[in-house]
Amino acid sequence: MKGRRIILGVCGGIAAYKSADVTSKLVQAGVEVTVVMTESGTRFVTPLTFESLSRRAVFVDMWRTDREFNPTHVALADWAELVLVCPATANIIGKLACGIADDLLSTVLLSVDVPVVLAPAMNTRMWNNPVVQQNVVRLRELGRHVVEPGEGWLACGTTGKGRLADVADILEAVRKILK
Image (cartoon, rainbow, N blue to C red; front, side):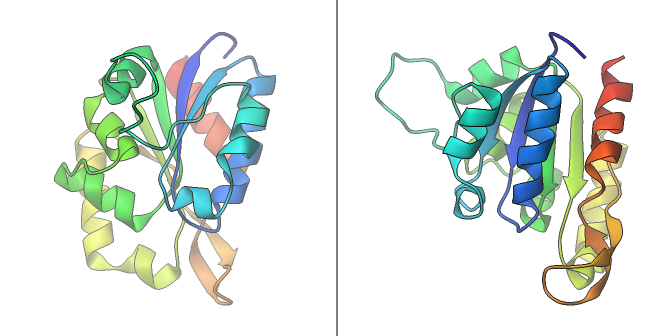
């Protein structure tokens, strides 16, 4: 994967801390990783963590005015060869399935014409919610790739399906798509 360009979208869920490991492993494999975080994502892991691991700027806000004009969502979409959203919350899955673009990450996701990989992570009841499942089906029909969440202990104190897939499985899905 050396030299490939990936946007890593980080959403607000406890599994966001695992996306730091994903970033580190991608960078070690020679991938250029640009991280785009939701505002909620920054409450779990700071942008500085991802800047340190990726050695690149982290993007959170579409509305920064301290640089020359360059629509961030378009520039990022043009740069990327793949977008990996890890963790993909029910919120971002719903936004993408419905074409909602109300923050930088959702706007980037609607702007790209490259493969999109979603690694969902959420409470079991949320994952099993019929609306979430319909959104996942719709996204797959639209050509988006979904790495199934794992089963086991969840941060909410329950056990079930919804935990982020193993990092190795997520990276393998990305490798297969970028071949």
